[in-house]
Amino acid sequence: QIANRPIVLFLSRLDPKKNLEGLLRAFVLVAGVVPEARLVVAGDGDAGYVTELQRLAEGLGLADRVVWTGFLDGDLKVGAFAAAQVFVLPSFSENFGIAAAEALMAGLPCVLGEGVAISGEVNTLADTFFRSSGVTASPRKCHMAIRPCIAATDASMSTPVQSPPAYTPRAVVRETRSTSMCPEAERPTPASS
Image (cartoon, rainbow, N blue to C red):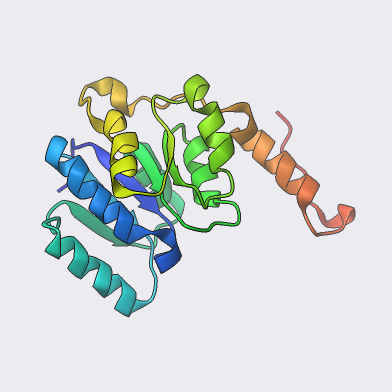
């Protein structure tokens, strides 16, 4: 269902604050322009809420364009980042947005909701480091940010872009250590390079 197709990836817990309803409505617009595109929703949440989202996707005519994977970790999570052309986290509220940081480390352009704590920084870095990135609240704005990332179907779309310096694996470990609540003696040391 998704082989050789442009993939828009959402990877997070499924919760109303994540604005998946807005993402599904935005994906209707994306699919109208790039019909071969697929939305991969990776994550789990309350079963009733997930059922509501699946019904909304079906009602919007997206039943065959949305892939619901459930929770992913390890190699499956790495594979999801590697297969995607763009990562989307349109949350109304995120204390940080660790999945967005993981997507950045994987070299993916990100479209983030204004409620994602790192969205301002990602938007500032967009011109330098990403093919397309954006901060979005509405389905139309989300669609306009996603579309350039998946419009081309050539091989260059699967080539990762360079991670911004603040989101290299080494920088993330360093920042995590510096803001950790654990005592200095208990902090892990990063592997030497």
